[in-house]
Each structure stands twice: as structure tokens, then as C-alpha cells.
Image 1 (cartoon, chains in turn brown, cyan):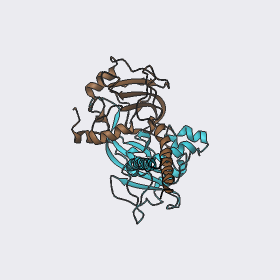
Image 2 (cartoon, chains in turn red, cyan):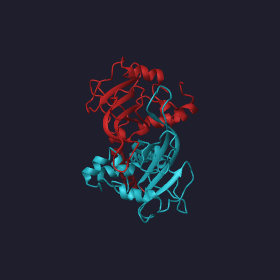
Image 3 (cartoon, helix red, strand yellow):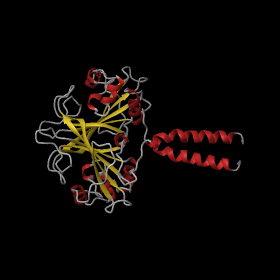
Image 4 (cartoon, one colour):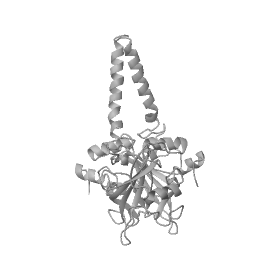
Length: 191
Length: 191
């Protein structure tokens, strides 16, 4: 019996160690530089997809001219925050959203109509971090930049629009069809 | 030293055990009934999102009439298959895709134009499982059904269309903007 314990321990620790790289490679919380700038989340395409829209006119920062095809917008949220929302209908501290904006195309390969997603136009990030931001939530307009950036000033329209119109705690759950029924069931809808 | 080993083992096994439920709740491979029907994947919204389109006219099984707004289509793939594709530009055996079709809406909350996603219209599933299907890939038209179903017959148009037009191994990687550069870099594009 005594001789089998170290083997079991080694096996268990090996399995734990094998499981670590995937977790470390997918940080689920905002990371900041020493001067408080947010690092661009490089793995957001592996987060939970909430929904997408085409050419929505609620006032995103990135818009097209009249002559360009409309943009797609994909919304992703961190997996830990998503699971917390499923349980509670609310967003925990350290929640991160990415709004990814892409150009649309209509004719390519076998597609002859409608719209599909093409080039990256930029990303915007919304973070809930009550220890850093007086209003709990902050917005970061990365665009195509890979560099850390500071939060947009509180005068940016995204703050007032999300605060006034977001159906659940500064977020547009009214446009996320799998989360809206959960917010209704948990009684966390503002509108 | 001897007295600390069982504690370390218990701790390691506890951590492993705590980590297990999340993995068991998210099966990453196709599951079949005893008579070979595919079980509806109930957690596909937690898989990796590849892209979405609006009103694409490449011939999906679920179409709208002329008077209805066009449908959105979201594509999800199993996380293990996604990671394998990032490494190799190819899909491993047991890969699963879900094509989720949703109605679109244009006017709601603060949105005044463009389109956002609304009610579920149905899902279709594509599975790569060389031990079960002669052509390796099979298609399952669940629609809104939650019940297990059999694969569509090999005469269904999805088989010939995917085989002829899919850019990588029966799949439309030409429409997945984050995977297309990987297939190009790995040299796995057919077209």
C-alpha cells in the first residue's frame, strides 16, 4: 500500500499538470498593464458566442458609409461569466464582452445572395470591474490595434446608452436570444 | 514525509474530481442511441462559433418564403475539433458541426434598422465519424426536435453540395473568416 501512494500522487499531479496549459492559455478575466491599460483579449473567439447582427443602427462606434455593405457584429462573453449568468441572470465582477465588427460580402464561392462575414474591422471590449471603475463597467475601443489601451472617457456615448437601454445591468440582453429567457425567468430584466 | 503523501493525494484527487463535472456536462463527441440514431447535442451554444450569415442562398434545408425576413445561420464546431484544426488545418474524426437557423428581426428596443437574431427555427448537424458512415461525414436534420434521429440518406443534397463545394474536407471553410487563413497556411484548401 505504501509503495502505491507516490505513484497515485504522481499520476494525479500529472493529470492536473496536463490540464493546466489549456486554462492558462484562455484567461477568463481582464488583464491590465502596470499603468492600468487593458490588454487586448487574444482568445475571445474561444469565448461564448451570444449573437450577431447585420447593419444594426443602435450606434456602434464603427459604421460604414452609405455606399459600403453593412457590417456584421458578433458578441462574445467570457465563459465563467456566461455560466454565472445561466445560474443567476446577472453578470459577475470581471465579466468581459467583446463586440467584433466584420465587413460583409454577398458573392463568393457558391453563395449568390444574402450576406456572410469577411474581414475584421475592429473590436470593442466592455469590462465589469468594480475595483477599478467607478461605474463598475468600462469600454475599450481597440479597433484593429493589438496594443493595450485605456478605457474610453465616461463622456463616451457607449456609457450612457448601455446604462439607459441595456436590459440587464448595462448589457443588451434583449438582443441575446438564448439569454433573454433566463433573465425573464430570474427576474433580472430592467425593461 | 510519509504522513503528508496521503494529504497531497487527497488534495490532487479532489481537484481532479472538482474539474470533472464541467467536462462531463460538455460532451465533445457524437453520442448515438443503441440503434444508431444521433442524440441532439444539447450544449452546442458552448462550442466554438465559426461565423454567421444572413439570408445566404446556397441552399440550406430551412428557407423562408419571399414575404418573410431572411434567416440568420450560426455555425458552431466542437472545441476539440477546433483546436485540432488550428494545429493541422484538417478536421479530426468525431468532429461535429451545428448549423443553427434563427429568424431575424429589425425593429426592437433601440434598434431601428439592420437585422438581429430572434427565434430558433431549427438546427442541422454534420458529423465526421469514419467508423459509422461510408463517406465519413453524415448530416442530421433535427429542426426543432429534441429527439434522436437517423442520418439523412446519402441522396440528400447536402452530401453532394458539401463534397463538391466545401473548401476543406466537406466543410465550408471559405465562409469561416478565422479558419480560412489557417487552411491556406497549412495547404489544406481544395479550391
